[in-house]
Amino acid sequence: MLSIDHIQVTVKDMSIAEPFYDKLMPILGFDLEKKVSAVIEEHDLYVVEYLSPQYDFGICSPRTAFTDNTIHRRKPGALHHLAFRAKSRTEVDELYLKIKDIGAEIVHAPRIFPEHGENYYALFFKDPEGIKYEIVYNSI
Image 1: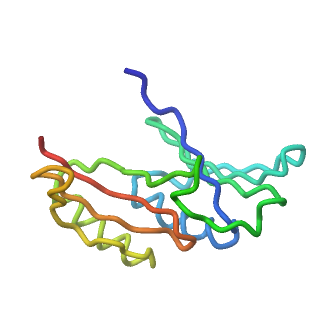
Image 2: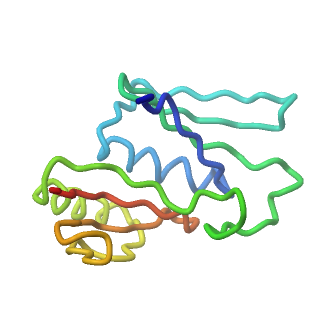
Protein backbone atom coordinates (compact mmCIF):
# COMPACT_ATOMS: atom_id res chain seq x y z
CA MET A 1 0.00 0.00 0.00
CA LEU A 2 1.25 3.49 -0.83
CA SER A 3 1.48 6.02 1.97
CA ILE A 4 0.70 9.72 2.01
CA ASP A 5 3.64 11.96 1.10
CA HIS A 6 1.99 15.34 1.59
CA ILE A 7 -1.39 17.01 1.95
CA GLN A 8 -2.13 20.59 0.93
CA VAL A 9 -5.34 22.35 1.88
CA THR A 10 -6.43 25.63 0.30
CA VAL A 11 -7.62 28.09 2.93
CA LYS A 12 -9.55 31.29 2.36
CA ASP A 13 -7.36 33.77 4.25
CA MET A 14 -3.72 32.99 5.04
CA SER A 15 -3.59 35.79 7.63
CA ILE A 16 -6.22 33.91 9.66
CA ALA A 17 -5.16 30.37 8.80
CA GLU A 18 -1.41 30.50 9.32
CA PRO A 19 -1.49 31.61 12.99
CA PHE A 20 -4.09 28.91 13.74
CA TYR A 21 -2.11 26.15 12.00
CA ASP A 22 1.06 27.33 13.75
CA LYS A 23 -0.74 26.39 16.98
CA LEU A 24 -2.44 23.24 15.67
CA MET A 25 0.43 21.51 13.92
CA PRO A 26 2.66 21.11 17.03
CA ILE A 27 -0.34 19.51 18.79
CA LEU A 28 -0.47 17.01 15.92
CA GLY A 29 3.26 16.29 16.26
CA PHE A 30 4.81 18.66 13.72
CA ASP A 31 7.94 20.66 14.61
CA LEU A 32 7.60 24.37 13.75
CA GLU A 33 11.37 24.46 13.24
CA LYS A 34 10.67 22.47 10.07
CA LYS A 35 8.04 24.88 8.75
CA VAL A 36 8.78 26.38 5.32
CA SER A 37 6.93 28.85 3.13
CA ALA A 38 7.13 30.22 -0.37
CA VAL A 39 5.46 32.66 -2.71
CA ILE A 40 5.18 31.32 -6.25
CA GLU A 41 4.02 34.33 -8.24
CA GLU A 42 3.52 32.53 -11.54
CA HIS A 43 0.94 30.31 -9.80
CA ASP A 44 -0.63 33.12 -7.73
CA LEU A 45 0.25 31.05 -4.66
CA TYR A 46 1.47 31.49 -1.11
CA VAL A 47 2.13 28.13 0.55
CA VAL A 48 3.18 27.16 4.07
CA GLU A 49 4.36 23.61 4.67
CA TYR A 50 4.80 21.79 7.95
CA LEU A 51 7.36 19.03 7.32
CA SER A 52 7.75 15.70 9.08
CA PRO A 53 9.36 12.32 8.34
CA GLN A 54 5.90 10.69 7.98
CA TYR A 55 4.27 13.24 5.64
CA ASP A 56 4.09 16.98 5.06
CA PHE A 57 1.02 19.14 5.61
CA GLY A 58 0.57 22.42 3.78
CA ILE A 59 -1.86 25.30 3.62
CA CYS A 60 -2.21 27.30 0.41
CA SER A 61 -3.72 30.62 -0.50
CA PRO A 62 -6.60 30.62 -2.99
CA ARG A 63 -6.05 32.03 -6.46
CA THR A 64 -7.01 35.71 -6.49
CA ALA A 65 -10.00 34.90 -8.71
CA PHE A 66 -11.41 32.64 -5.94
CA THR A 67 -10.84 34.80 -2.86
CA ASP A 68 -14.53 35.69 -2.58
CA ASN A 69 -15.66 32.05 -2.77
CA THR A 70 -16.91 30.42 0.40
CA ILE A 71 -15.49 27.25 1.87
CA HIS A 72 -17.92 24.36 1.84
CA ARG A 73 -16.89 20.75 2.30
CA ARG A 74 -19.69 19.43 0.10
CA LYS A 75 -18.59 21.25 -3.08
CA PRO A 76 -17.28 18.90 -5.78
CA GLY A 77 -13.54 18.57 -5.44
CA ALA A 78 -13.50 19.95 -1.89
CA LEU A 79 -11.94 18.21 1.09
CA HIS A 80 -14.86 16.84 3.12
CA HIS A 81 -12.70 16.35 6.21
CA LEU A 82 -9.33 14.98 7.16
CA ALA A 83 -8.95 12.42 9.95
CA PHE A 84 -5.82 11.90 12.02
CA ARG A 85 -5.37 8.50 13.73
CA ALA A 86 -4.66 8.54 17.46
CA LYS A 87 -2.96 5.73 19.38
CA SER A 88 -5.63 5.52 22.10
CA ARG A 89 -8.82 7.05 23.46
CA THR A 90 -6.67 8.79 26.05
CA GLU A 91 -4.71 10.48 23.26
CA VAL A 92 -7.98 11.64 21.63
CA ASP A 93 -9.05 13.12 24.98
CA GLU A 94 -5.69 14.84 25.53
CA LEU A 95 -5.66 16.29 22.02
CA TYR A 96 -9.25 17.49 22.47
CA LEU A 97 -8.22 19.69 25.40
CA LYS A 98 -5.27 21.15 23.48
CA ILE A 99 -7.29 21.75 20.31
CA LYS A 100 -10.07 23.38 22.32
CA ASP A 101 -7.46 25.65 23.98
CA ILE A 102 -6.26 27.06 20.64
CA GLY A 103 -9.77 28.20 19.70
CA ALA A 104 -10.81 25.51 17.23
CA GLU A 105 -14.55 25.14 16.78
CA ILE A 106 -15.43 21.84 18.41
CA VAL A 107 -18.10 20.12 16.31
CA HIS A 108 -18.26 16.96 18.46
CA ALA A 109 -16.32 16.39 21.67
CA PRO A 110 -14.75 12.93 22.01
CA ARG A 111 -17.26 10.09 22.07
CA ILE A 112 -18.17 6.81 20.42
CA PHE A 113 -19.75 7.22 16.97
CA PRO A 114 -21.67 3.94 16.56
CA GLU A 115 -22.60 4.79 12.97
CA HIS A 116 -18.88 4.30 12.15
CA GLY A 117 -18.35 1.22 14.37
CA GLU A 118 -18.83 0.14 17.94
CA ASN A 119 -15.29 1.21 18.93
CA TYR A 120 -15.02 4.35 16.77
CA TYR A 121 -13.96 7.03 19.28
CA ALA A 122 -13.45 10.45 17.75
CA LEU A 123 -13.42 14.19 18.09
CA PHE A 124 -14.42 16.53 15.25
CA PHE A 125 -13.36 20.17 14.96
CA LYS A 126 -13.07 22.97 12.43
CA ASP A 127 -10.39 25.54 11.77
CA PRO A 128 -11.38 29.25 11.91
CA GLU A 129 -12.55 29.14 8.29
CA GLY A 130 -14.70 26.03 8.61
CA ILE A 131 -12.37 23.28 7.32
CA LYS A 132 -13.29 20.10 9.20
CA TYR A 133 -10.85 17.72 10.90
CA GLU A 134 -11.13 14.62 13.03
CA ILE A 135 -8.97 12.83 15.57
CA VAL A 136 -9.97 9.16 15.78
CA TYR A 137 -9.08 5.99 17.62
CA ASN A 138 -10.77 2.87 16.29
CA SER A 139 -9.92 -0.39 18.04
CA ILE A 140 -11.26 -2.87 15.55
